[in-house]
Image 1 (cartoon, rainbow, N blue to C red):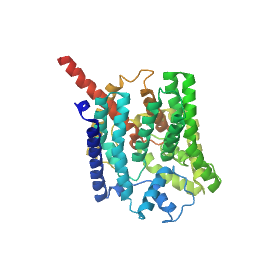
Image 2 (cartoon, helix red, strand yellow):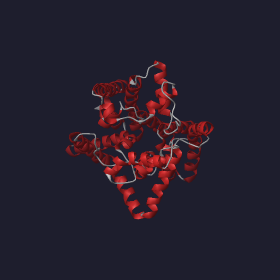
Image 3 (cartoon, helix red, strand yellow):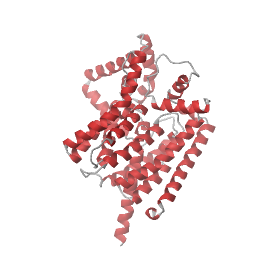
Image 4 (cartoon, one colour):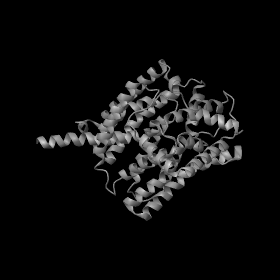
Length: 396
């Protein structure tokens, strides 16, 4: 039925639905003061300091800069520290992601599956929930989906300079969330399996030429400003130690304890702080290699748990646990048709493997699984339609 709808009308309807739901939740989020409950990262504060509205911190390269730049641009345009225009822009980006999923679905599956996936993403509670947060998730998801639209378009085309431009966009994604930085290594393996070593090497070489440019520019800026090499952010060592445990209570305590430890050692330079905790993690691994392996495996499993932690209530955790269990179950059914070596799904599975590997070592949170959420919805749509079509065939 979905495949018979007029394409433009479907896109308009699903975009309007996604936008309405995100705007509605934004209204609830603001009216109930949920921003204070869930907190926010430093991007908004950094943006105000870049505009000269608050004191400039001694060091401003602790976080990747793109989201901060966008916030500063929006606040500067309206000449107001009111975050509402930024949040409205995020609602538009979240709704726009629905259309990108429809395009990806048509490349990776078929029209009906693509439209069901777009509708699913429009309704997805995790994606709706993070839209009004002053965090990078919504922007990063939209940027990553656009990158994949371009990547799958180039998957089996003749190699060209378009890959450099695509890599440039991927590099900007890294400046939004540095976690994506190492993805080309996993993409290389997927391409090697699908298209051979020579094409994989040339493909990733062209992609990498653009990929490295934004980080190189940011690194140069930081070197000339601070005399230090900071490719994206200084949080790697901190995030490594903060989350290198399976003890939930330890995770809660670590930020305060780490801050007190750094202060007691007289460490004020963020790079020195990160180096200290990276070395401390390495020492833990050397002292207990088997324990470290258990932590990595356990964190990988936690990355794929179906339920969130607090401050969500018990009923919210239960409802989301049921929802994600359904998504995973249908997604496994849908995944059965994606394992062909030549399939462009290889690029998607490379992203799944990469983010799982990264967050099995660094800090783990369901928030960091969100870039995979649109692809999970697409897989779930494939699984749901496979069940529906299977029943229809059995009745026929």
